[in-house]
Image 1 (cartoon, rainbow, N blue to C red):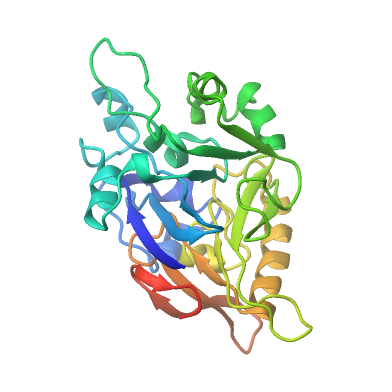
Image 2 (image 1 turned 30 degrees about the vertical axis):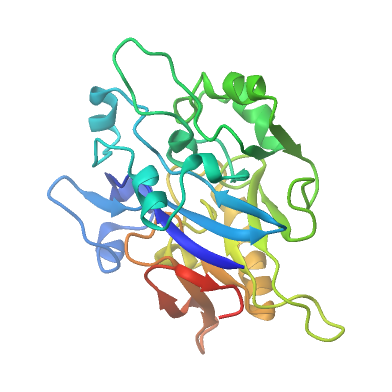
Length: 296
């Protein structure tokens, strides 16, 4: 099996919102900031093939489903559907995808499911041959969002996913579509029912599997957020997220599972490390993946 990092449309968002209650004097050391207080964010997907005999895409980024005024409001940089171009560059198209795994249904993670915006045209679902894997708990949140995050959802998307006949809702740690090849970790700090998909590495003797890759979604959007106290203003429960993140990083470090980042503008993959003061951070990193074997 091989892995590719697939860039979607990029964003520029307010740095203060992305770093919660951390002061700018701290976070501006970690990322570049423009005159409007915005930082660069990737919307990066992970492609794995063959995984359980299938071609699997983990998330789809923000895409270009917004009309021009909303695209500007949310800092979407490009006006073309970058994800489709990125898939083509590595020899795939959206029709080739057998499974799309969605950590949650906020628009910056699922907008790429939709065709580009066109005047007078209703939203159209791409990926005609894919099973869409979504957490059952988060599905309920998407159907009845809280006023705090209602704007983060695409109102038409749940209906389109249901009408496809290819929606799988996941209650436990595995899905029917991917079996034991992918293990799901669950988190509620950012949004109820967030699913973190771990591509399971090989077993080592009698111990647990090691050396896999986990899609960190918005639990850990990029390297700066590996520091446990750092959260986003968008997180629904920062204290819950911090506790979840600490336990998650302990587990990934113990099993040598590498972290795949969706929003880090410069880094796709990182090893978990911990310094002599017990603080988590990246060890070795890779800016992109181009057909990387899982065990590499």
